[in-house]
Image (cartoon, rainbow, N blue to C red; front, side, top):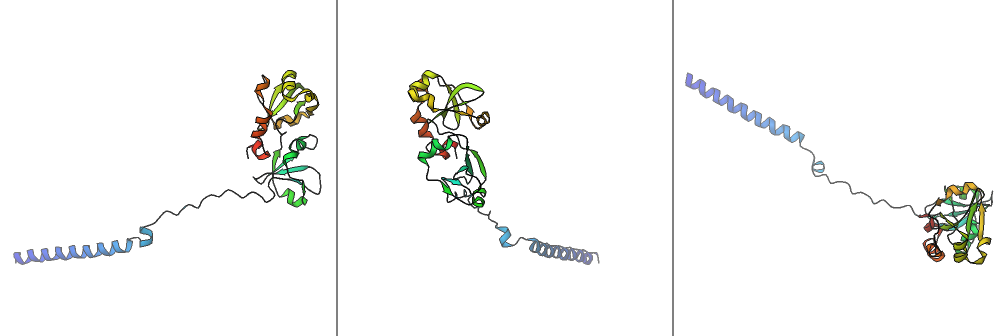
Length: 202
């Protein structure tokens, strides 16, 4: 009797073990991820493309309401030629003809700031400062004395000095003074600022 009970217990244990194995397989099959999820590939990153410049980039625009001139740069922004300065005249020789556009089209381009004087064309001073400055690449003003101005720009240099309103000085950066005629080259400065974009680092 005891021997039969022993075999009965062994049989029950085997049945329990097989039952547990079957349930384990069923459970794993239901929780196994789908093939698409099992081998998931990272999504390919789409390249970030720079916005295309507007069709009129590089053009001087004038709207219908005011006659202020704006330079439309390749960054899609319009830069102002201040009306009460000769800024536009310093760039005129390297710019295409002015183009008239509707006020709506003009205002569709966000403002980017003011255009600086083209380097090597004219000299600048302001009413509240007796110093005279030459314009260097990137909107940098460098103080210059009479002797160096004469050596660099010739005898008519005094006629090249424009007096600007003080508030325009906030558009420029003050650099180191010109220490000698060899310290400032008109050709080199204009070579670095062949366009308004180049001068502004756009």
